[in-house]
Amino acid sequence: MKVAMDKLVSLCKRRGYIFQSSEIYGGMSACWDYGPLGVELKRNIKEAWWHANVRERDDMVGLDCSILMHRAVWAASGHEEGFADPLMDCKACRQRWRGDDVTDNRCPACGGELTEPRMFNLMFKTFAGPVEEEAATAYLRPETAQGIFVNFANVVDTTRKRLPFGIAQMGKAFRNEITTGNFIFRCREFEQMEIEYFVKPGSDEQWFKYWVEQRFNWYTSLGIKKDNLRLREHEKKDLAHYARSCTDIEYLFPMGWSELEGIANRTDFDLIQHSKHSGKDLSYFDPDTNERYVPYVIEPSAGIDRTALAILVDAYDEEPDKDEIRVLLRLHPDIAPVKVAILPLSKNQKLIPMAKEVHNAVRKRITSMYDDTQSIGRRYRRQDEIGTPYSVTVDFESLEDNAVTIRERDSMKQIRVPVAELVGTLERKLSGEPLEVLPPGGKYWLGFEE
Ligand code: GAP
Image (cartoon, rainbow, N blue to C red; front, side, top):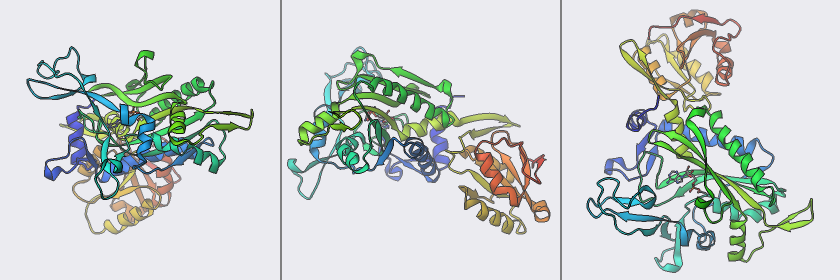
C-alpha cells in the first residue's frame, strides 16, 4: 500500500522519528529534526552506503570536507553565477513558485497571473570573520561534491590511487529552496552522499552505465521494492552544460515519481574549472600509459533525507487485526533503528531481573530496547509500528527452562530458544535466516495472546 504523506508525518512525530525544526516557536520551514529513532535510521543508511561504497571496495576512499570553503570554489564551480532557480509570484494570491513547477504562466494554486521570472540564487550567504563586508562573503555549501574536486590532487598524492578510482563524501548541504514541502523530500538543510569517480576519458560512458546499475541495486538491497523504483534518462537538451549524460533514480513517493538520486557524467568540467581558477595543475599522470590527462568524472549523488523518506514510505504497511488495524514498518533489519526489543511478559518483579539480564547480553552485540510498560500485545504493536524486526519475551516459564520466545514482526510467528542460543540466533535471523530454522534446543511456539 502507498501511505499518504500526512499519515507518515504523523507516525514519524508520534514515534520519535522526525520532528519539525523549532516546533515550539511555530517551526522553521523546510528544516527537520531527527528524533531518537530517526537518528538511528539515518546512521544506518549512512553506514550501509559507506560500507557498500568505501569499505567493501578497493577503488574508493572517503573524505570529510568543511562546509565553509573559499569563495573562489563557488565561482569556479559556477554556483555563484548560475546556481539559481526562476522565481515567480502570483499577483492574485501572492503564492511564490519555482519556474519548473509552473505551466502556462499561471498560478498552479488559483490560476492567477504570475510575475516575470526572476533568477534567485539558492546558496545561503554568510560572512567569515567579524566584519560583514563583501570581501568576507562565504557560502554554506550547496553540495558536498566541490570539496572532493578541490582535494583531488591531495588524495592522489597521499593515497597513490590509480584511475579508475573514486572519492566518497557524505555530509550537510544547504539550499535556500524557493518552494518546499513534501516533508523531508525538499529541505533547506539536508544531507548528501556523493561519489566522484575519476576515469580515463573514453571509458566514461561505460563507467556511467556501471554506476547507474550499482546505485539502483543498492536501493533494492535495502529492501526498497523494485516496482517503486525506476530510471529516468535525461534528454540531451535538458542536460546541465557540463554533463554528457545524466540518469535519475526515481522513487514512487506519495506525491508521485520523484528524484531520489542523480547519476551524471560530469566530464572533465570541474577539474578544468578548478585548475583555471586556482592556477594548480589538476591533471593526472597515468603510469600505465605514460600519458597525462584530466580525468572524466562520474557522479552518483544521493540525498540521505530522500533515502530515509523512500525507505519509510516503502516499509509502511497496514493489515486487519481483529477489530483494529495493525500498523507496521517492514524495515530491512540493516536499516531498522531498533533490531530487537526485550519485553518481560508483565511488570511482575520476578521477571524483570532476568529480562534485564537478557537485555544486557543482547545489547552488547545488537541494537536493542527494553520495554516493560503496558500489556504485551500493545508493546508488540508499538514495536511493529517503529519497525523492530524481532521481539524477545521473558515469561514465567523462562525462570524454569532458561528459554525465551522470539517473535518475528512481519509474520508474528514465534519460536522458543534457550537463552544461551539467543544472541547467535538473533544475529542469524537479522542476517536473513528464516524464523523456522531452530537452534539446538529450540522449538516452535504458539505465542502469547496479542
Ligand atoms: N552534486 C550534484 C548535486 O548536488 P542534485 O541533483 O542537485 O545534484 C543530488 O542533488 C541529490 O541531493 C538529489 O538527488 C537529492 O536526493 C538530494 N537533494 C538535493 N536537493 C535537496 C533538498 N533541497 N532537500 C533534500 N534533498 C535534496
